[in-house]
Image 1 (cartoon, rainbow, N blue to C red):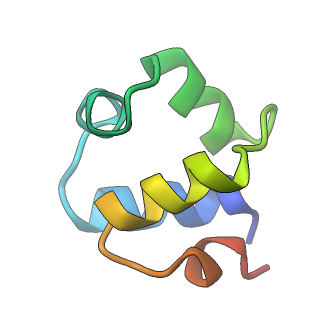
Image 2: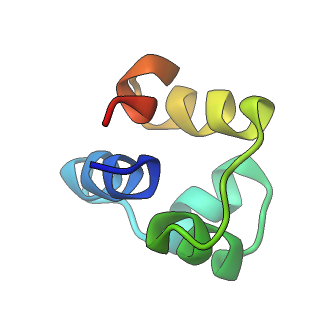
Length: 64
């Protein structure tokens, strides 16, 4: 799985919308959408913030 797929799966597992995640980490909904589709890669800092909100470790998101 890609980083985006891992983020999507964790987000959906928490019944969180893309809007909820975007608001929590301070980015736009289109940015979250692009990350989940794999057209953008989050920075390490943004990835760490996303992991924190998704209640997981950054390593969980970058596993393929």
